[in-house]
Length: 278
Image 1 (cartoon, helix red, strand yellow):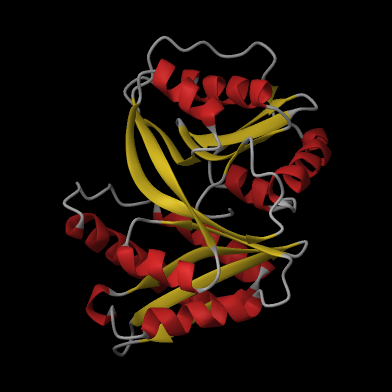
Image 2: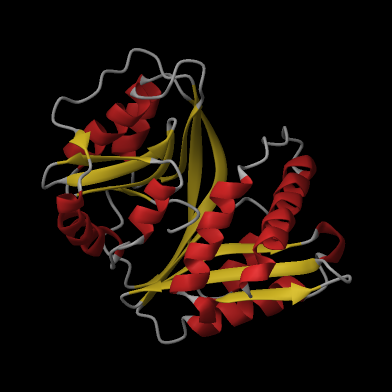
């Protein structure tokens, strides 16, 4: 993948996920902000150039993309998408193979997967352990922010790195700054955890204990702007603290996707990963 591919990668991913929504009989989500999407893609192209691969399609277009990251020996699949007209022909498997090769020496791996049956099968066949997840969404009700939670500062990076190492096996590092640059709000529970969200959509949440994690999630929901929709993805059965919070806030729950883990990935609880940076 090259820098000049970034706009086409974004358009390809939009087309692939719109197609998935239609095949599942779900409303097509609103398009993502291209500027924010391009920032994410360029950030990963800068940090992990050997993990970013595209497949050429028609002249001037792309047929597929795979983006993987490595952080202190932890591998993650940030994006795998194939154009709807080129799916089920082996291209996705080839792209996934390139992404997996990038992490062949990794101590652990994480994939946040959609409910696409083909993707679920591919990740399971690659040796990852499947953990079904639920999605919570809607307008939060009767949620109060935790008084201990405050804005994240540069001084909190050391705490975040320590919590990340315990919960997922490696820190996010500059990925947290990339999220902030994309318009996300960062919150911290001093010495115990942090959360990053965009208008109530949780991008990542990690804490040293369930109490701090629940306080962070309640604060995110409380800070959801009026009229906006809070969204919490990739809640596994191990994250009962999160289920308790979203149920109390009267968000709707539905089965959706899975987290795939392999090797050393920390305790992974209390932890809510995001699709972009795992």
